[in-house]
Image 1 (cartoon, rainbow, N blue to C red):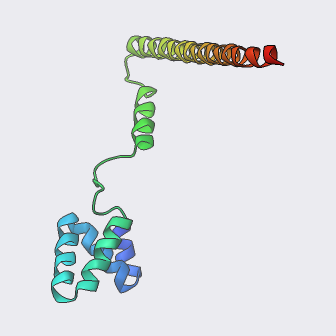
Image 2 (image 1 turned 120 degrees about the vertical axis):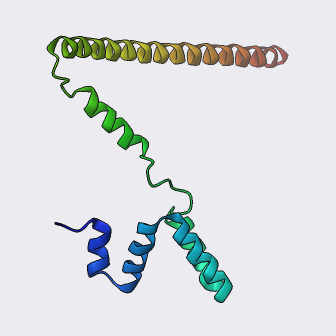
Image 3 (image 1 turned 180 degrees about the vertical axis):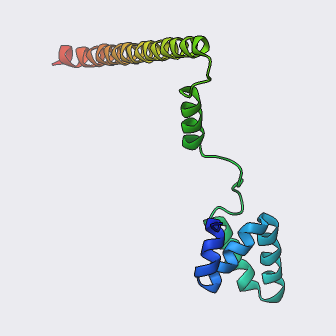
Length: 140
């Protein structure tokens, strides 16, 4: 039986690494309890623990939450995994291809829309500029 990564650090690391792994295994409540005890016994220790918890994102991170990239990768790998049903897999592959085509067509549409908006704004700017410069040339 191989030890978990936190246990491996606990077996080989310094006493700080072992303490950190021990607190991580017990969750956010253990970190908060140690921080409060640090404030009670010697306030700089509590302050240092609070700063470390915020810096390392232990205070606000949900341990079960995945990052957006990890979630997207999990869904992408699940999307291309075979279900065992050939008809469903063919339907799923066709639907994914159509959705990708639709997404690329929509992105192209948005790009054309942005370009048209930019061109209209530029044309308006040039028209306003020529109107401002026209009276100046008449005065000379």
